[in-house]
Length: 247
Length: 299
Image (tube, rainbow over all chains, first blue to last red; front, side, top):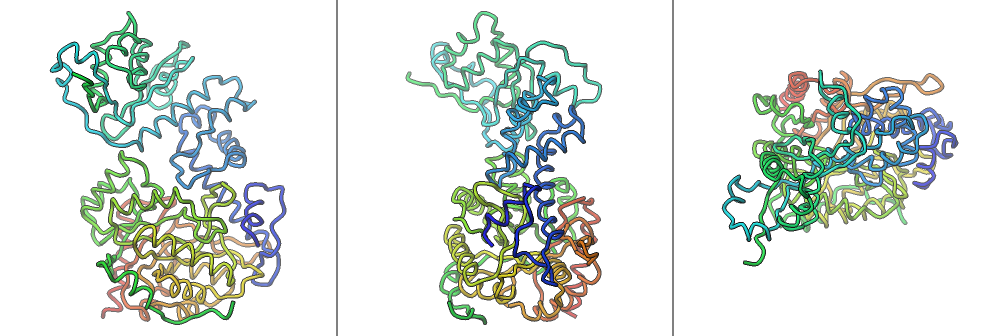
């Protein structure tokens, strides 16, 4: 019995139970093999349920379970670290006919993946709130700000922040239709998605790309609320280093 | 290959592992750690003396999992229990995964590292289950090679756990106890004896669980697992026990533990409860029963 022989039928119920697996009476161990099949599917399905609670809430428990079985069969994890399992979910949902009308669903899955990444991301101590003000303006403009490992940005054509909040928070307002940008931070140990305006998102994206403070301001453009955006980042412990560059 | 060498052979262990102080779990009840119990544990851990974590849940870069683990490890000995190395698999060990485990073990300096006589990955897919292997000369050589690789990479002894079985392989030619004894002798690894797995496998494969214990190399056992199972049936209506880790341990398994401890002497005893996890007081009730079993042999 090879591992390939044993495992081929684990995720494919159409395939026969492998030969050479026996009961104590020497009979083919069909029902017994099904225990492994069931363990594999249930275990991986549960991992997806834990990883995509909002997608699950939107499509309903029963549909999610049926959909997860299809996902597991076509996209089994490549690594034993299930915290990273489901990266293919947004693409899978994009191609899934029964949810084609929920056009925002793949972006909800993207947001849930980003929150999971933020949960497990590395730790870094934030800079002091007055550290930026202490720099001479020309030095500040050339400086590069390091952002905390959990910090991510997510842009969507949909009201992705409001959809997430509506499904996670009792009494949150119903989402409206506009495009939204979300900043993900982890001020304590719990990742938080925060709505951020377009100019603020451009500014943070430039910082994440390693651009200087001045270049990031330029990327934000005329609409950038610099004090508001910096206040958001500092308040969420999101700035962790200042590379002052050449004096 | 000739007949399997059985019997105690500690030469390799002495040579490889006596150079540094060997960390060890205390011969007390331990519990599988669940994050929802964090506050309750710090408030009142009694009678639990140590904790076990699943390695794969603690290989991220930071955040709450590692913060809680650090706080727990500052107060209690920790056992790191891997479920994803696929030691019984045909393929090479996943080097990336081994490197992750090394990073965790170096950071944490746990009292124990253990894995399973099972496989879980093949052809680039991870199945998230402990899959069985036939016991032959070829699989014995493969498992021993993989354990050598793990112990070399981690720079420490590992423990190997006996599986729960639902079926048998027609091609198997070595008993599970002989297989584990030979692996331990060849590699110097210790053994983790799961008492519930012994009971589940013996029921499912119609063997006598006490004979299994009597044939087991108990001198190599450095930890025991205790857990619950549930009853099912195969197509003939034959009783099948499922190793569910979702219930208190059954009375006959507590009796099997007594039988084992009377022969082995005291060992670290882990309460494993991974599904439908109850609140902390219910887990400490199980731990108290384990403490009582240890007291019975001391009396």
